[in-house]
Image 1 (cartoon, helix red, strand yellow):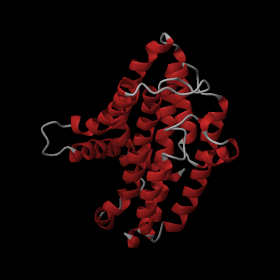
Image 2 (cartoon, rainbow, N blue to C red):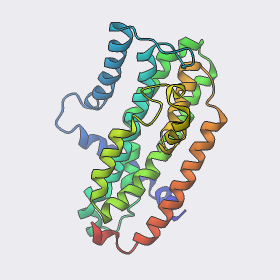
Image 3 (cartoon, helix red, strand yellow):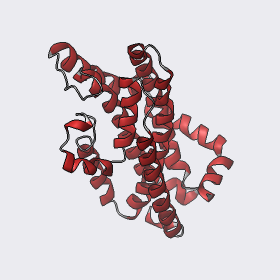
Amino acid sequence: MEELRQLWRMRALLAVMTRRELAARTAGAAGGLLWLWAPPVLTVAAYFLIFDVVFGMRLGAHAPTDRVGTFLVVGVLAWSAFADATQRAMMSLVDAGGMLQKNPLPPVLFPARAALASAAVFVPLLVLLVLLYAPMHHFRLAVLGVAAMAAAQLVLGFLLGYLLAIMAAALRDVIQLVGVLLSLGVFLSPILFPLTMFPERWRPLLWLNPMTAPVLGYQSALLRGEWPPLAVWAVIGVWMLLLTLALGVAVQRSRDQLVDWL
């Protein structure tokens, strides 16, 4: 709660830091923010072109949609946003080590800045995705569930990123390990295949991935035109609770040593 109070008290500074973070990513580039949007847009466009247009691949009867490219775009964009926010938040304290040693700023500002900057890049892409997919369901209100899911994903990315940032400050091996896990995580979630195609006895393993529930929520809203089911929200709530408890312990135990680690 103290961390949240600090963020609220310094919200103006956080907004300035977020804008500067985005400006720093595009410094010296004439294309500006376009270069932040180009990689994810071209990636999802390639999936759609290859699987739907070129090969015309189709999924089984129990999938949220029968078109493979249309299915992949939803999960891949959500995962890209999550991976970007998590990695940048994880690196935020290490990158800001010199500043924290010279200025008594709350460390929570830096992972929060990274998570918000990542959201500023990917939220417009999710809005575009809603506009493209909503006509499939005659603009049902359930498609607006994407907004709630994006907010939940932002909180998850911040909590996990801040926790990993503290762990990375203490042990740099965490950075390498998380990079590997993020590369493998896309295969252990219903992003490249529907949940029903995964062997039933191994299906519980997918719920160990914090993005399984959000991806299912996006698929429900965008591919079926239905509000994400209660089970999805329950799993997201459990993940938030677990990450909050773990983060609370990490913050408490690192409070006096964090700057020295950096």
